[in-house]
Image (cartoon, rainbow, N blue to C red; front, side, top):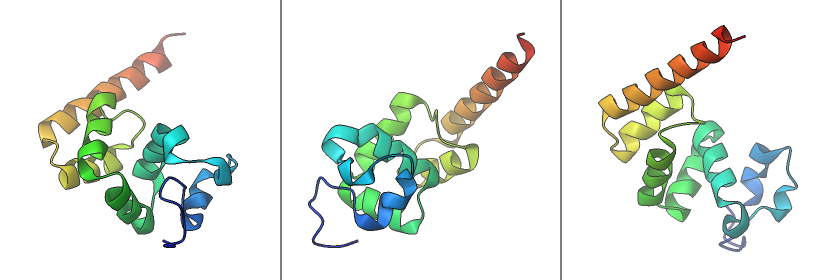
Length: 109
C-alpha cells in the first residue's frame, strides 16, 4: 500500500473492493464497519495485511465476536477464527446458527 495515503483513508489498491461506493470518500473514521466487514469477507492478501497493520488483530477479533461471525462466509470465518484465536467450537456454533436461520427463512412462506 502507498505510504502517501493518509492513515484514515482507504488505500488506492483496496478501493476496488468497494465498487458500489465512491471509494475516495470512504475513511476509517466514517466507514469503519463497512471497510472491516468487506475486507474480512472479500479481501485478498493485500487487504488482510493492511487490515491487520491498520486496525489490529484485537479490534478485528472484537468485530467478529460482536457480530458472531454474521456477514462472513463459513470458509472465511474459519480462516479468521484460526488467525485471531477464536475457538473452533464457537465458530462452528455461529456457522450452524446461520445455516438454521437461512433454512427457516426458506421454509417460512
